[in-house]
Length: 333
Length: 235
Image 1: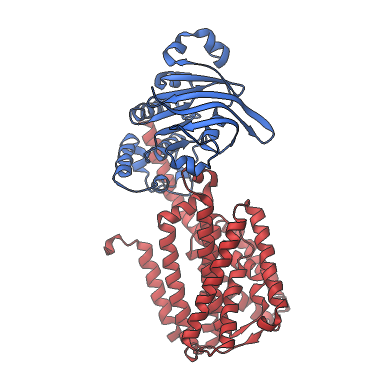
Image 2: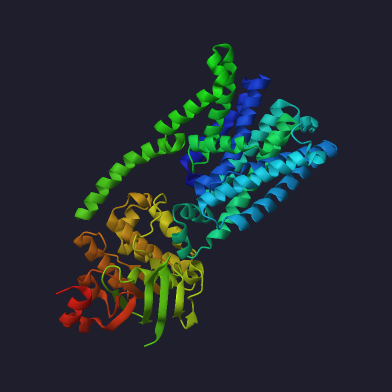
């Protein structure tokens, strides 16, 4: 591999990842480490959603079902079996297989539909999973849920931090590679114009289903990590609120950027934490969700393409002006 | 001359409207066949029907003697038909390079050579290789759309109104490029600009109210003032 061909942005991301590896030695407080772990986990979840929304143009309101599948797969296996690393890996494998099969079937059956019909159907399917988890109490424990043990090594906050960070970095670079590959170009062309992509010779449904399966499997992995971090599972892992959170993370950070959803996850997790902890300062902060909504409205007004998208557009904007001048020159010639 | 594409009594609807009633024509292998007609005559719908984007409700469409009228657009495209739509269909957020690469079904020696050739034909595309397609001028978008259809070894290119909305100097450039391409592939062209059509077309079909009503060699049409006035409104 010729290092000269590595993009400058790759070095920046790697440098940033290295800095994050040092953080747990500087930030030793468990609660702050826990928040950062949550950011990594929701960053993974939001990136999986970005592959659907940002790169393929698929709007899903039921993405949480894959997160929930991952969470319950690990929760149930860890509860019923010894909390060892091999069993945990088995639970990850089970989560991947179930999420892969469900996303494949859902994709094949529903991705032929137009965007809003698809969005509504996924919402209904996620609701179905939620109801099934509530009713199947023998296995899921219903809304009350159950606690379980995890391998000892993962009880240590720092180890969980590194596991989440390594997962985030690997998934980020993996997805980045995927979206810059010929496959990723086809996904983006589907997002831009489905019919045109089809008349270039691509079977659009195949590509959408593959994107849906990859996205579903990654979301299930986020569910696995989340449930390991809290060591408790209940039907909240199928709640629509989580889909809305991940949608906001992606939109606020910048759709179709991969790094944006991670930044969005960071902002939302910190907003959750800080705004709710300000309730001691003033009663208005007890209603932190109002402030959260206000922040969201402000971000949408001032960063219509999301934070990363807007910053990129500003940079592109200046090069676009230069490009326009070049165009005018070449057309005059 | 061998017929590459053959339409026989093709009819097609858009929603509840019957747009094509009886379209029949042949596109011989090699050269440029032009579909002429007034606005709303059904020329664009004819190309979309060939591509499978508007399914034919009646009749037959054969390409290299194989029926394609019931096939999906991606299968038709993979059989060797490239399509340049009226709106150019550029992927605005993808760069010029990505727009071309996404159209290349495989990156082998053949397609790379074709890409190099088309980039020599349209040097602007090389110049703006990393620029998003949406930021190109109208003429550059048209060049990109044609380049994208050409990079694969398509035996037939369907080009819909390449001169639409372009400045005369750019129209000349596009016309010149199609003239060079016709040496390498067969072209079915829909064009309102008669001057352009007459300069690059070899044979023509006139479509009126969803039916093919006349055909012949382009040289003959240039002499037939009555026909031109009657069906094309050119005096």
